[in-house]
Image (cartoon, rainbow, N blue to C red; front, side, top):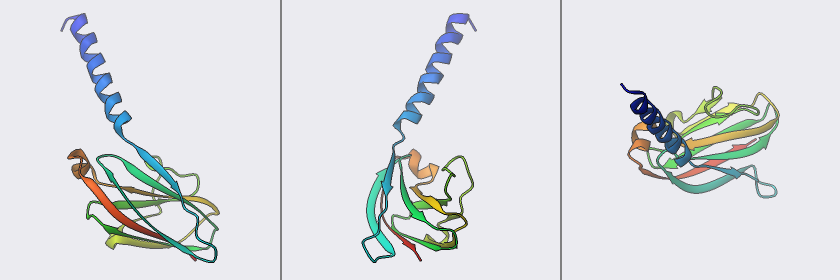
Length: 135
């Protein structure tokens, strides 16, 4: 392959990779419970490789419950304070559309709502309802 063709091909691949990453939208939603409440329910939707990150503060030893309804393409992962989607192992995920677990640390937890690659690749729209509870 000629150097000019190699350079053009390299630029095309770099642009394609950058375009794919730039299109992924991450929306962060801070969760605050109403006074006296220990849970909150939110509705939302996203499409493709986009995701929604719900953040909420909790103390070590408390129990978090996450339930997810809506599209069967909606999935979630729960991350401990200091851990991030794609960079750490999730504490829990949506086995049977819900998860309950005792929290190991005090701080801000992240609940990532997303869809698997096969449906994301098709750009499917994902409506969902999520309930987050801390006790």
